[in-house]
Image (tube, rainbow, N blue to C red; front, side):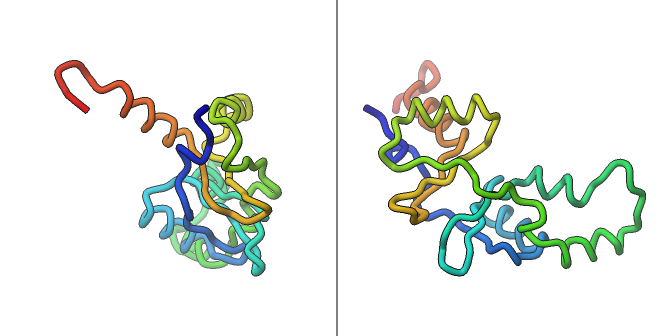
Length: 143
């Protein structure tokens, strides 16, 4: 049976609750990801922050503001103020179909993967799509 361990991204980058949004954005750009686990000083997952969380925090359509205010927000607003606290998690042994059901049902982009309470990976919709694409190459191309 295919498990989360077979698909997950191992050792994902993380941020801390006090990480400014500018650094969250930089990590996401550098790693090409849209979700980051938020861990405390003991390494426990306390939240997850997404690119959507960042956009909503900075780009409110109902509040008019100047560019310098955007810069200030990026420096002063932290991951903790925008993250989803206590995210739903899975283990490496979770069947992959179950993780896919959770991602679909809750409309999440990713789930942190914990092994005995320790972050070991992250599984995202992209991981499932990559696996699917690898198993179903276009006609005329070999694997």
